Image (cartoon, rainbow, N blue to C red; front, side, top):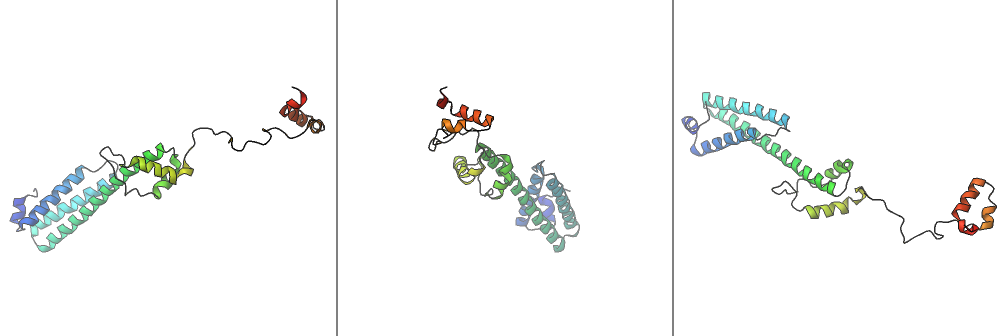
Length: 200
């Protein structure tokens, strides 16, 4: 039998309580329909709690006592809490995905994502209609400042011109010193590095 106002009224339940029960029942049905595929374990638990709600409703129908009414309300409260927890998990997952997209924009390798997410205020983020973080540009700047040592450099960096080698990268040896080198390979190397001393 469907949970209707007529049915609840016949059980002697007050009008304002009827509205609450109907709304609660509607929320329960809607929550089950909106459960995400990614939360299969949660969906299974939702079915289990819904079954308890149906059993409590049946007991209320058969007995109509305060004892069963109290049990129904207890199960309903537990279901509301579980529904809120499920929605919070889904919201957290969406925020983490949006945050990871910004980390990618900042050129931070994925191997650092878990660490950064652990120390970031993910729950405090706000998403727009497109599922993106509202203050994206400010957050990107903040990430680059706070996690700059994790940013992956995409280009090669040459030697700084502020502190070039004093001798232009060449040996300070004189021609005479080079010629005194006993090892022939080392001597040839020194000659090549200082070819201007030998006129070529």
